[in-house]
Image (cartoon, rainbow, N blue to C red; front, side, top):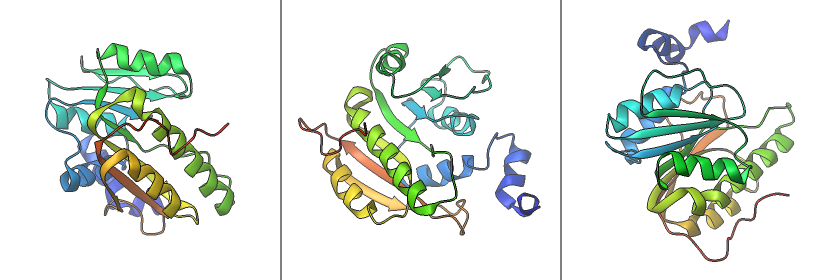
Length: 206
């Protein structure tokens, strides 16, 4: 099986991480420093919790992480790790996430993806609509001057999305960390210096 040849998969098992994707976040944070010691972080689409494990290492005991997913997130034995089961589209759930940390987050991250159908054009479009949805929620979730990280996929509409999403941030970057498989069309957008806009350039899909 391919997975047995995957060095990051083996390394995740050796180091006790729940997912090989943990190394993507480690590499991205090493490059862009979006999560600091003491940060309050929201992880959207957090199951199985691999990014939450890494975030706890990055933020230390003075920080916290809230993970949200429609799937169960196995419990993490740390007082500053909170899991919420539900759909981020539910306004009451977004309010709950902010309430449990007594304020908006310093950083919002998401490695979320739709269920892949195999139709690349359709899948990429649906993933981009999901990204638009999450960006449209940032004024509710992210502090002014906060940071944002989200997984994207190459598509014809990507350039337009990045231009519009860039209106929310002082600086945006796109990157593909070494832990991403070379065969994958995924990349990550990093937004630094969040600045809410009065009229959203990205409307949530209906």
